[in-house]
Length: 469
Ligand code: ADP
Ligand code: F6P
Image 1: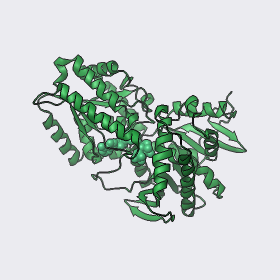
Image 2: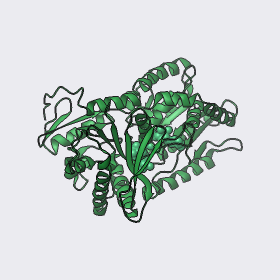
Image 3: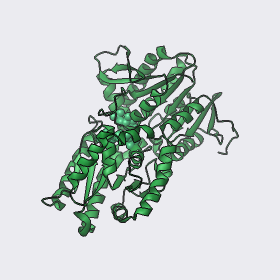
Image 4: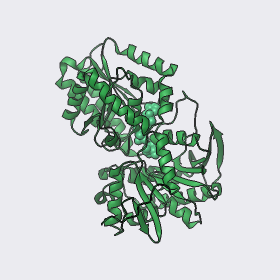
C-alpha cells in the first residue's frame, strides 16, 4: 500500500475515544482514514507566529503522524478568515450576497498555498500518494508541480462546487481552475457538484471531458469524479454502545419528562446549515399545532465556528434572538420549546443524544455532504428508530432518499414534515431506517478512502471515450 501524505488546512490530532474530539466532517473522516494507513497528515497548527519559519512540528498520536506549521496573523486573517471563509465558502454555498471580493485575500491565499507547498515537500517520498483536501488549498497541486513534485496528487473538495453563473463572479476564476488542472484526480461529494465543475470546464474553458470524467489539458490527463464521503460506521457504532452514550441517553430522556418527543439538530454555527430557517419552521409547527406543541422539544447543539468572520457573528446574534423570541412566545413554566446549546460534545455522548431523539432535523440550505444525517441514522435503535428529516439541498440527499426530504426554505413544508414524522407508524419508521442504515453502513468512510486512493493510483478509470460538448 502506498504511503499517504494528506494535506489539509486544519490538522486534528487524534484523541482517545470519549474525548471532546474533532468537530467538522473533514477532521472526523481523515482521522479514521489515516489510522489505517502509515501516512502523514500535514497542515496548519491553528497557531500564529510573528514571522513564518516553516518549522514543522511532528507528532505521533494514536497511530497517526501529524506535521504542522504555524502561520502569521496576516495569513490567518487574509487566507483563512479572508479568501477561504469570506470569499470561497459563501460563494461555493450559493451565498453570493455574503461573498467578499478583496484582492489582498487572493494574494494571501496564493502566498499561504506556496508556504504549504514549500513546507510539505521535504516530507514527500518518491512512491507517496499526495491527497490534498478542500477549498483552502485548490492551487496547491500546481505549486507542488512547479517545485518538481511528480508523485500522483489528488484533490478532494468537501463542499459544493457552485453553478458556473455564480462561479464566474470570482475574479481570476480562470487561473484558479487552471491551477486545479495539475492534479491527477479531483473528487467531489456528489454528481451535482461534479456536473457544475464539468459544465465550467466545457463552457468556459472549451475543453472536452470523457464519460469517465477524464479531462485532457496541456498534455495532461486529469480525472474528475464523485466520491460521496461516509462516516466511520464501526467507530460510531462502538461509540453509541459505550457507557458514556448510554449515560447521555438516560440523562437526556429523563430531562424531557413524561412522553415528550425530542427533535435534534447538531451543526456548526454556520449560515449554510439553515439554522434560522429551522427555528422559523419549528416556530410555525408550534403555532399551527397548539395541541401537540407542549409534547415536543427541539434540542439544537451548535458549537461556534469561524468567529472572526462577521457573517458568523451575525448568525450567532440572529439565532440567540430567534431562540429567545420563540421560547418567550411559547414556553410554559415546566416546558421550554428550544434548548439551544453552543458547545461541543464527545462523540460517544453525541451518539447517545442522537439515539434519544425521535426526529433528526438536518436542514442545511446547501451542504457538500452532511455527516450529521448519517450519524443520526447510525445511532438509532433498530427496533424503534427515529425519523430523519433531511434537506433536499444536502449532498447526502441523493443517497438518503428514504429520509423525509424537505425544502428547508419552506416553514410550512418543514412543519408538515415534523407532524408527519411524529405520527409515523413504527413499521414505516423501521422500513425507512433499514434502507438508510444499509447505505450509511456500506458507503462508509473506509469505502470512500479506498475508492479515492484506488482512483488516485490510476485504477478503475479505463473508458476514455469523449463525451460531447
Ligand atoms: P461540516 O463539515 O460542515 O461541519 P458535517 O455535518 O459534514 O458538517 O460534519 C460535522 C461533524 O462535526 C459531524 O461529525 C458532527 O458529529 C461533528 N459535530 C458537530 N457539532 C458537534 C458538537 N457540538 N460536538 C461534537 N461534534 C460535533
Ligand atoms: O467540511 C467543511 C469544513 O470547512 C472542513 O474543511 C472543516 O474541517 C470544517 O468545515 C470546520 O471548519 P473550520 O476548519 O473552518 O473550523
